[in-house]
Structure formats: C-alpha cells, structure tokens
Image (cartoon, rainbow, N blue to C red):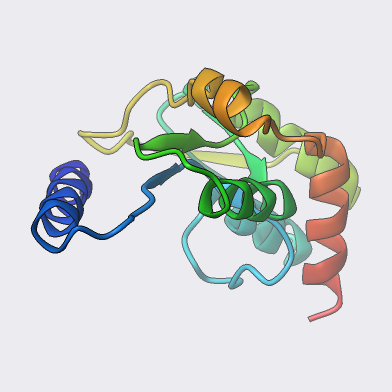
Length: 164
C-alpha cells in the first residue's frame, strides 16, 4: 500500500515533467463523515455500525495505537485550497490531533449509549502504532487547517448511519 502511494506520486511527477502540466498531490490522511459506506472497513464506520447493531466493537492489538481523523468537510476545503493554489509539492491534508483507538471506541459507545463491549484481535503485522499528519505546509502555504472537532464530526456521522 505504502509503495503504491509512492509510485503513484513518482509517476505523477514524471508525467508533469514529460507533458509540462500542472499537477497537485494531496497526501490524504484518515477521513470520516456522512456518506461513508457502512462496510468500508474503516474504524469509524466499523465502530458505529457495531454499536448500532449492539455488537462488540473489534479492536486490534491493545487499542493503544493512535490515529487522527479529519472530517470530510475539512478535507474537501483543503483539497479546494490546494487545487486553487500555486503549490507544486505534495501537501499533507489531515487532522493532527491524535486519539487512541480504544478512546475512539469509548467515545462512540457513549454517543450511541451502548455498553463498552470490546473484543481484541491480533494487531496486523504492518499496522503502524501511530499515524499523525504534519500539516505545517498546508497551514503555511494554503492557510488551511481542520476546523471540525472530532465530537461534532462523530455526531454528524452517527446521525447519518442512524438514518440509513
């Protein structure tokens, strides 16, 4: 997966040089929000769907690995700013605020008013213990940073899934 992303960037920049075209490269980090697919395999939608079905929430490893989550509206605003800019380098777009996976599960359980019933499975071999974008270039060059707090974004996302 990581190598696929790297080769895609390399090929994009080669295409730019060969055809003298303007390209933009956004490095998108975990994004969530309404219109996610219920079965897309992402942790936010998994936890919400498991909670809505009164199933145990599945955590991998000890749940202490961290992730950051960017609300979809913030990401779209970042992409629009990037597309309208003169920036010609890869830009990280995501939310730098980290949370552990177990904290996320507890927050979603509370919001759904369901018991904190978790099952633990082995952490996949290549799963990083931390994912957190450095967005200093996006702040400086695009005047962009995420605005939607996790609590509000989760409320909007949960409402969407409840109404499916």
